Image 1 (cartoon, rainbow, N blue to C red):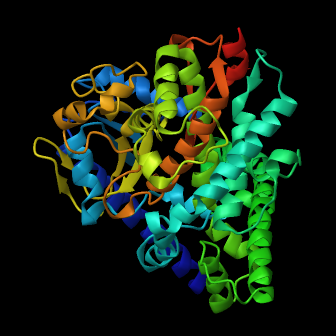
Image 2: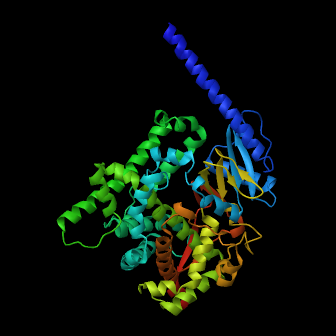
Image 3: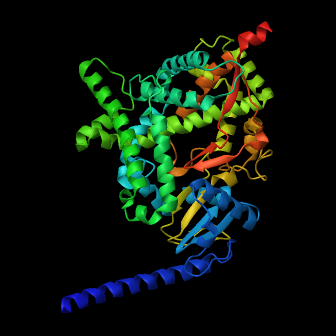
Amino acid sequence: MLALTLLIGLLVAIIIWYLISLTLWAIRAARLTENIPGPKPLPIIGNLHQLTHVKTLDDITDELLKHLDKYCEPPGMIIKIWLGPTLIIGLGNSQHIETVLTSEHASRKDMIYSYAKEFLSNGTVSNSGKHWEELRKLINPFMTKKAIEPSLGKMHEKSMKLLEVLDDKTENDKDFSIRYYIAKFTVDVMMAVNFGCDINELENDRPTSLEEVFEKTVEGFSTMLIKFPSCLSTKCGHMTSLGRETKENSRIYWKLLGEALEKRKNEMRDNKDETKRIFADGPIEKAEKDNLSWEEIGNIVTDFVTAGTHSLSIMVSTAILLLAMHPEHQEAVYQEQLEILGDDPEVAPTWEQLSQMTFLTRVFKEIIRHMSAPFIFRNIDEDIDLGKYKLPKGCVVMLVLYAMHRDPAVWSHPEEFYPDHFLPEESAKRPKNSYLPFSWGPRNCPGGQYAMIVFKVVVSTLIRKYYFKTDIKFEDLKLKYVIFADLKQGQIVKKVPRTLLKSN
């Protein structure tokens, strides 16, 4: 009985100590941030009462962006929000964002990324420290010109297969989802170039395809973040039916990637003359070294694969849609292709020819300005001085790339699709880090060059073959955010072969 009494007393003391520590921290944080604008919080719950109507991550994003516009001066530059005892400070100023991304006191990502280990990926996005460094070493060597250039032929081969499938499965001058086919194309390129295997997603409508399973996994994880945050934080999310379903989808995804890695390993064993190293070889060696299952190693490479498939498919298909909305820009892309490659889509571009496509480069950068992730989260380990403002130790910083990429003080046409934002003379006018499509600092995304090359190869091939149209108006576009930015309307276009245009 005495032992039980002592145990209860100890637990009560720990709880009291925790509450006192939390209260003292909150008082200090509130004092240091009293000059940062934001909605007035209530005791204990903070601003949670203003988010009671949200059901999805997209709803939360919309609500946060509304607060940014309402409370910030200039809009979107800095704001604070209390979610219970958690202080979140949103930054949209390019200098502030650079300070955070390059600070040693903000290199640790927020807890939301660690939750993702259970359901999305145990790779570079969700890890830190030595494990993160080890995983980055698996990726970096294969994101260089030396590694990418030999794969241009394979990228163009898959682009030609895309044309063949579009000719076969879609009607001319009729609405269709270009995203559906581009998603399969990016998976085919990823598997062929980085895993050394042809899975021919473009030819198959399998219910367990990478893109489809990933969409279900992300949707489930996003819903859990809203409905069961405590389950995620205590790692009991698997106990809910949604958690079990999401986990099963993620395991299917990891298994598919693991099977691709295992296939590559078997091919290497059977063909010992194979000398060219590709991305898959690093994870295979790690699996053998650390005695990991193929599912476990599939989990580790998930974020690399999704960045090169899911994110890239959004960029390419959105580019085709926006070019369809802006015939003058589509014509500029086409004329550039005629000058460099001619009108035959079967002509494969070289690295040098791709580098000459300056207008298409501007299109790529402008697409990412519109479609990059809206937020990046970082935990603050020590106070960070932003000049007029302070970021207190223990807060969560939300880097609002959405606001920074639409700052009217920086961008001449912030709410338009305007590729000339990236003319050399325009870029020279902007602050150094006012455009961060692949983040910045030690934790930046390493795949920017790979994404641009695949983007250029496939858009070049598509534009030489087809003229694209759409009934969707640019001013009617609505963004949605389920971890990635996407379009609520989808990417619906019409295609007309250019040979028919010429004959008419």
